[in-house]
Length: 107
Ligand SMILES: [Zn+2]
Image 1 (tube, protein in one colour):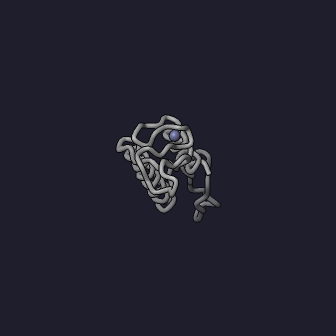
Image 2 (cartoon, protein in one colour):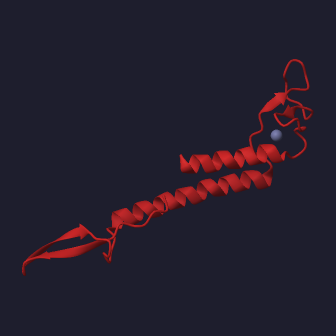
Image 3 (tube, rainbow, N blue to C red):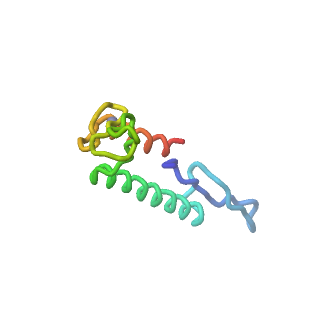
């Protein structure tokens, strides 16, 4: 997504007409291509901000691996897949959340 902008230039065909074409050394980018890149980057920044806010607030998703109550109702004594209490921060869950966010970006 952070690839280079398409660069365009004007190629003359004779003295009285020419065409706009992609050129490695072109000096401008059509506005809709640049605008699309800006929109995609803004969406990515918003998504990553959401990831950071969830980490800071401690609200990342943490699937329960070992429930405290036999009937499965939620408890602060539930444990995640890394065998950490739900009332304690879990580095493994945070790492998994970050890896997923980075995977979403690359995929
Ligand atoms: Zn965990």
